[in-house]
Image (cartoon, rainbow, N blue to C red; front, side, top):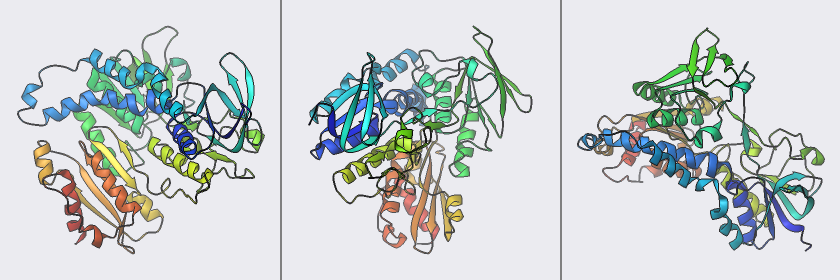
Length: 465
């Protein structure tokens, strides 16, 4: 092939793009991956990984304080400098050289450039020195450009130097007073991380009537209770109308619709994300720039003749989670390699974890979603810590576990677990839902004693088995 011709061209080298490129290359295809920033993408440097590194020191200290004997050993504050240095290490010091061998081993050509579609199977790339050239795909182009944060049109907000996920996960100092706009996963996680790392005042403002509004109602309420117990102010059902930070000023003031004024040193905006497709050349293939790329269950873009354009990960708007993007990438790669692969998980079997303390871990449908679909639903709840494993994990272990059961098929369609360290309970629920395991069969999956997983037994007993 000519130097600028490949079987597959991937635009975006985040986790979804890397997995798509790897799947195709391992199947024997020639692959180029185009990336304008860092190989590894948002997740590695400004999202999943550094955010969890910021959360972990506080989690470890809180876990120790819940165990008699260990609690007495916790005598000092978190070493913030060490915590931030560890975060830097987890983020590779924002240097992607450690990611490159993986591409090289698979003979994937890395093009450090901004990539745009320029017609059927053509990607125009503008390299860092301004050079523009055209790459041609013989089989497919895969878009994996992710999303960008949304800044709502609140008076004065854009001029107040707001933080986004990149600002907070790469912060060099902990603000004394932090205001968080948005009570979803990013806002909640970073509010607690900053508070535990030393912020004197943290306030979360959420427009919906509860935190984590897409999850079961009890989840947001339990997180709110935990936040308030450790000094985080939570304001729900509130609309922010203005933000004022005079030029050069260190502090800002935010005004809510009811007249409440909140002073802070920094404001983190975490109200949502939009697909990074505005400057992607979608119009050259008949699609609308700036919108999610609508795909079918083969991850092929709808409305593009020939089935050569694919979109995986956040840019297709289905489920904005790294693991789902990686899953979609593997499906797309298999389709390109000629396999009869279909996406069966991205809409109904989505595992998700909010790494607050308590953690909120869920997969599948909430009770409300299941009922909205007209399913004949039965819901069973049990305290997550109401088993022997909870007793030996922590004093006064708090949390709730819930199964949403489709009575007509006697299978689980949704599950939620809250509590400290409950994320590892989630995959068993994911397997049960994906495998459509009946409750009668699931009854014979015996949980080990004494672990938190024994809550499965209690839930099934509560159901009536």
